[in-house]
Length: 236
Image (cartoon, rainbow, N blue to C red):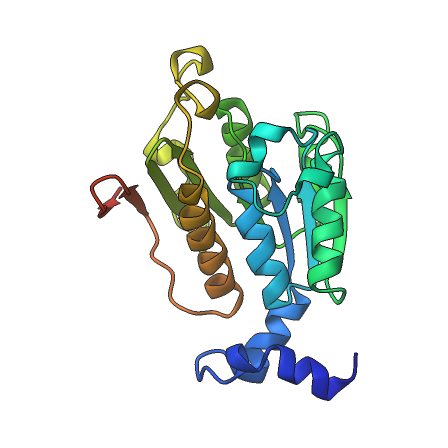
């Protein structure tokens, strides 16, 4: 792709005074890790790839199932049965071949989390269980990596930025994880397909703001109730 084509592709971002060419260069130079290529991961992958993130790492050990398709919008019927990482790779390549996609087809656990996360500038937690969320958070604190956090259930979601420029982390908000078996998840309670699109887009938006040095609200969590259409931001 020629340089003028590249400018045209990202021109609507570059035209924003607060981003400009320098901001787009920062986006291209950035390395972002997304943990989870499901409901939240799908819109995050979609919008960061479209924005021109230089290196996009995606970690997930699951395969695409039919019931994923109501909300995991980067996957298609033809992806059912294949790994979510391979499906995500095909999506990114079709959308923006300029993005360097790094597929990580394994479950992130204590044996590999530090090695994987150390290679990226920002980590985005799109996982679906508390064990992973706290492991990701604690490793970000250890490695001094900023973390973009989100979660969804039914009609409700929440998102926050942790460990960025000295800000607080997940344990400052919730010191200990609950027992997973005590917390209903999407498989038992369901989720309206558009909800992860809303929360995931907010997570991608916060990530781009961090990369381009735009203001980011710290030590706050945003709670979204889409059934009653209420948005609330709490400080902690």
